[in-house]
Length: 167
Image (cartoon, rainbow, N blue to C red):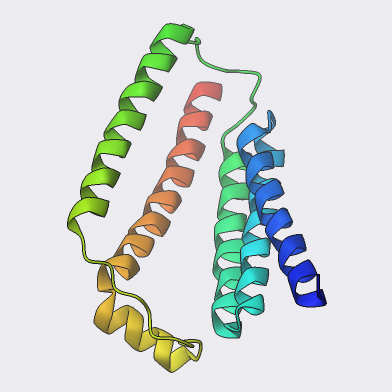
């Protein structure tokens, strides 16, 4: 095993451990920090793949902006010991199965009926990435923008709802 393979395995382990920690953590704050660890590992994978611009954007946008947004959302959510009345496990399980099944059906339809384009090799300069995003993949750009706007609105709503419950 050479040094490159060892670096790749370490970075991949960081991504997997961060993702598992985010999913399996009982504390919402720790889950956010594990998620930031996974995002940093993905930035490391971009560096390993020879795309320094994408690595920089991963660190700046996801670790910086989205990470701070998630921390603020957790802080604005209010005290976690004042939880609303819990629903039974059957209701939670039924909702989880319904949402998961719907997501699986949508994913299978998209995978089955879509022709996937591959990014040109070595699209790592800002100009090449910008052209690829704006010319060939505008839907992905719009979906990321929609995700960020939805996250901001959700953080504001969590803050407003937690203040109404306290007051």
